[in-house]
Image 1 (cartoon, rainbow, N blue to C red):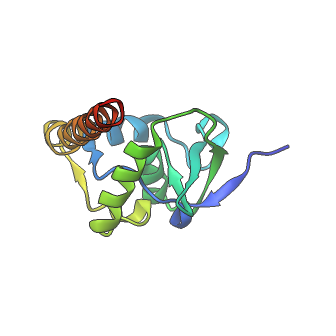
Image 2: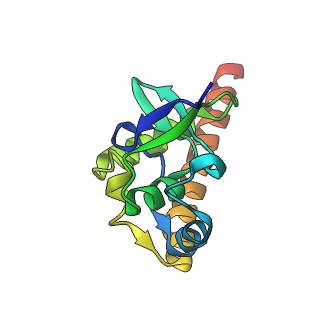
Length: 140
Protein backbone atom coordinates (compact mmCIF):
# COMPACT_ATOMS: atom_id res chain seq x y z
CA UNK A 1 0.00 0.00 0.00
CA UNK A 2 1.49 3.39 -0.97
CA UNK A 3 1.98 5.90 1.85
CA UNK A 4 -0.71 8.45 2.52
CA UNK A 5 -0.16 11.89 1.09
CA UNK A 6 -1.37 15.24 2.31
CA UNK A 7 -1.47 18.68 0.74
CA UNK A 8 1.45 20.73 2.04
CA UNK A 9 -1.00 23.60 2.51
CA UNK A 10 -3.04 21.55 5.02
CA UNK A 11 -0.02 20.97 7.26
CA UNK A 12 0.19 23.25 10.29
CA UNK A 13 3.82 24.00 11.23
CA UNK A 14 4.99 23.79 14.82
CA UNK A 15 8.18 25.78 14.34
CA UNK A 16 8.79 29.43 13.57
CA UNK A 17 11.96 29.39 11.46
CA UNK A 18 13.93 27.29 8.97
CA UNK A 19 17.71 26.99 9.11
CA UNK A 20 19.27 27.96 5.79
CA UNK A 21 22.07 25.47 6.48
CA UNK A 22 19.65 22.59 7.10
CA UNK A 23 17.66 23.55 4.01
CA UNK A 24 20.78 23.41 1.83
CA UNK A 25 21.58 19.96 3.25
CA UNK A 26 18.08 18.69 2.37
CA UNK A 27 18.26 20.22 -1.10
CA UNK A 28 21.46 18.25 -1.78
CA UNK A 29 19.72 14.87 -1.47
CA UNK A 30 16.10 15.77 -2.25
CA UNK A 31 14.76 14.57 -5.60
CA UNK A 32 11.24 15.92 -6.21
CA UNK A 33 10.75 13.31 -8.97
CA UNK A 34 11.50 10.36 -6.67
CA UNK A 35 10.03 10.46 -3.16
CA UNK A 36 11.01 6.87 -2.28
CA UNK A 37 13.74 8.17 0.02
CA UNK A 38 11.74 11.13 1.35
CA UNK A 39 10.87 10.45 5.01
CA UNK A 40 7.12 11.04 5.47
CA UNK A 41 6.09 14.14 7.41
CA UNK A 42 4.80 13.08 10.85
CA UNK A 43 1.36 14.57 11.54
CA UNK A 44 -0.65 14.75 14.77
CA UNK A 45 -4.20 16.05 15.08
CA UNK A 46 -3.89 18.68 17.79
CA UNK A 47 -6.77 21.00 18.64
CA UNK A 48 -8.37 20.15 15.30
CA UNK A 49 -5.28 21.01 13.24
CA UNK A 50 -3.04 18.66 11.25
CA UNK A 51 0.19 19.59 13.03
CA UNK A 52 3.64 18.73 11.70
CA UNK A 53 5.78 17.29 14.50
CA UNK A 54 8.88 17.17 12.29
CA UNK A 55 9.92 17.64 8.67
CA UNK A 56 9.52 21.41 8.37
CA UNK A 57 12.75 21.81 6.38
CA UNK A 58 11.81 18.93 4.04
CA UNK A 59 8.39 20.52 3.46
CA UNK A 60 9.96 23.89 2.57
CA UNK A 61 12.40 22.15 0.20
CA UNK A 62 9.48 20.33 -1.43
CA UNK A 63 7.56 23.58 -1.86
CA UNK A 64 10.62 25.17 -3.45
CA UNK A 65 10.72 22.28 -5.91
CA UNK A 66 7.06 22.83 -6.83
CA UNK A 67 5.45 19.94 -4.95
CA UNK A 68 2.04 20.42 -3.40
CA UNK A 69 1.54 17.03 -1.73
CA UNK A 70 3.88 15.04 0.47
CA UNK A 71 3.99 11.62 2.04
CA UNK A 72 2.79 11.75 5.62
CA UNK A 73 2.57 9.39 8.56
CA UNK A 74 0.48 9.68 11.70
CA UNK A 75 2.63 10.58 14.71
CA UNK A 76 2.66 7.68 17.18
CA UNK A 77 5.26 8.93 19.66
CA UNK A 78 4.03 10.25 22.98
CA UNK A 79 5.50 13.72 22.75
CA UNK A 80 4.96 16.66 25.10
CA UNK A 81 1.75 17.94 23.54
CA UNK A 82 1.53 20.98 25.82
CA UNK A 83 4.84 22.18 24.39
CA UNK A 84 3.64 21.49 20.85
CA UNK A 85 0.48 23.48 21.61
CA UNK A 86 2.65 26.42 22.69
CA UNK A 87 4.65 26.15 19.46
CA UNK A 88 1.52 26.00 17.30
CA UNK A 89 -0.01 28.94 19.18
CA UNK A 90 3.13 30.99 18.47
CA UNK A 91 2.96 29.98 14.81
CA UNK A 92 -0.69 31.01 14.54
CA UNK A 93 0.03 34.34 16.28
CA UNK A 94 2.69 35.05 13.66
CA UNK A 95 0.54 33.96 10.71
CA UNK A 96 2.36 30.69 10.08
CA UNK A 97 -0.50 28.45 8.99
CA UNK A 98 1.30 26.29 6.40
CA UNK A 99 4.90 25.54 5.38
CA UNK A 100 4.53 28.20 2.67
CA UNK A 101 4.75 30.85 5.39
CA UNK A 102 8.10 29.41 6.47
CA UNK A 103 9.65 30.19 3.08
CA UNK A 104 9.89 33.83 4.24
CA UNK A 105 11.45 32.76 7.55
CA UNK A 106 14.66 31.08 6.39
CA UNK A 107 17.50 32.32 8.58
CA UNK A 108 21.20 31.64 9.04
CA UNK A 109 22.28 28.81 11.33
CA UNK A 110 23.24 31.26 14.08
CA UNK A 111 19.94 33.16 13.78
CA UNK A 112 18.08 29.85 13.86
CA UNK A 113 19.86 28.87 17.04
CA UNK A 114 19.11 32.26 18.63
CA UNK A 115 15.56 32.80 17.36
CA UNK A 116 14.17 29.24 17.32
CA UNK A 117 16.29 27.12 19.65
CA UNK A 118 16.46 29.99 22.16
CA UNK A 119 12.70 30.54 22.00
CA UNK A 120 12.09 26.80 22.50
CA UNK A 121 14.41 26.70 25.50
CA UNK A 122 12.60 29.64 27.14
CA UNK A 123 9.14 28.21 26.36
CA UNK A 124 10.07 24.79 27.76
CA UNK A 125 11.51 26.36 30.90
CA UNK A 126 8.29 28.34 31.45
CA UNK A 127 6.12 25.24 31.01
CA UNK A 128 8.32 23.19 33.35
CA UNK A 129 8.21 25.96 35.97
CA UNK A 130 4.40 26.08 35.73
CA UNK A 131 4.25 22.31 36.14
CA UNK A 132 6.46 22.42 39.24
CA UNK A 133 4.34 25.22 40.69
CA UNK A 134 1.13 23.32 39.95
CA UNK A 135 2.56 20.14 41.52
CA UNK A 136 3.65 22.05 44.62
CA UNK A 137 0.23 23.70 44.88
CA UNK A 138 -1.48 20.32 44.44
CA UNK A 139 0.70 18.68 47.11
CA UNK A 140 0.85 21.70 49.37
